[in-house]
Length: 127
Image (cartoon, rainbow, N blue to C red; front, side):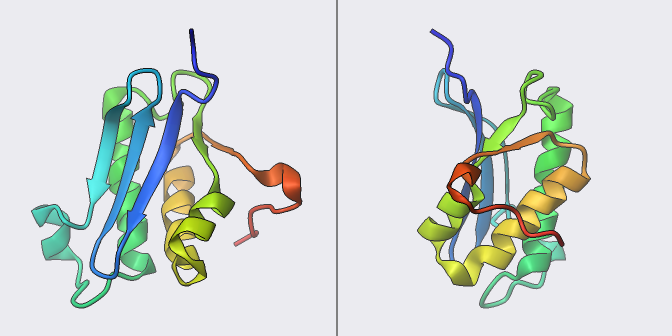
């Protein structure tokens, strides 16, 4: 049985760290990840007590690069699913700028994204 939304973007945002994972829902495996916890990113970003939208954009850029290396920037032809509204609801409105920074960075770096959850009248802002 094939899951229709095979590749899904999952975000984890705390005050100090930002992590973005792309999960293969067929086997539950993380196929690519990027995080401000990683030393190369941590040392170049000045997160200090909290990470900002700039740090989130860098996480998205690194994740996009890693997806390209894995050959998954197009999610095996279908795309990578993301429900931004659900992520904002879970992470809180204060983190919406960080969430959109990650999503826009992925999109700007050639990752094909499929936006879920827009049928209820919510849609992407036009930045």
